[in-house]
Length: 216
Image 1 (cartoon, one colour):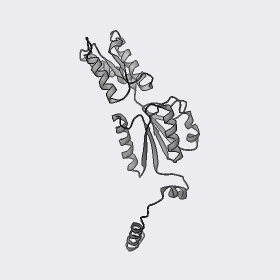
Image 2 (cartoon, helix red, strand yellow):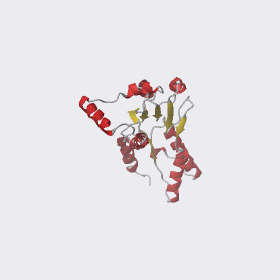
Image 3 (spheres, helix red, strand yellow):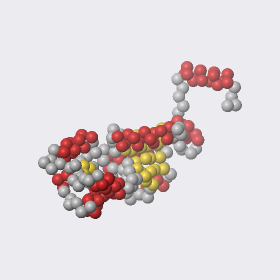
Image 4 (cartoon, one colour):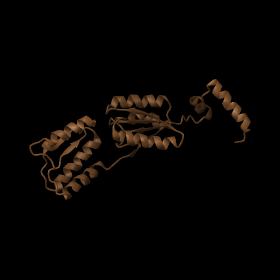
């Protein structure tokens, strides 16, 4: 604001002619704090509606603060999680937002100690003391089943994600607990543990509804 507007116009005109673009990496080194104004975000699948909504929300908040979000999909692969996390760390992101695929995030301990901020979403980190933003998956499933019970339903199906995924296991536990409290016998015929893809969910729903005694 203290520079003469005419000089500002001349500098901008020269920059346009030369095709000048700021070198953000050099800027971060010059500042001395090492910040790159970037955040790395690792989600289950960027095409998944939940992951897409999550990514867009983080992007909106980051953009308002002049920060760029770099996104990668993990496909529930712990090895890919490590690979992409390391790739983002090598690019000196200021922080990481991770929906973890594996159950061991101890590989991030040294990076955490060096000052990289990190927060986990939807699932807690394993073997790493870190902040996490999660849902109460078990109680959420209990509430969902109770809602259907109040509507008079007794044959309630469960199409869920793979039981090896902690959040899916918690939801399934809540489903079974709610049925037990309602004195409804568990029926494996109307339970499906499928992947998180849209096609897998559609197939599971069609199979359940095509049963001789379908869920209501």
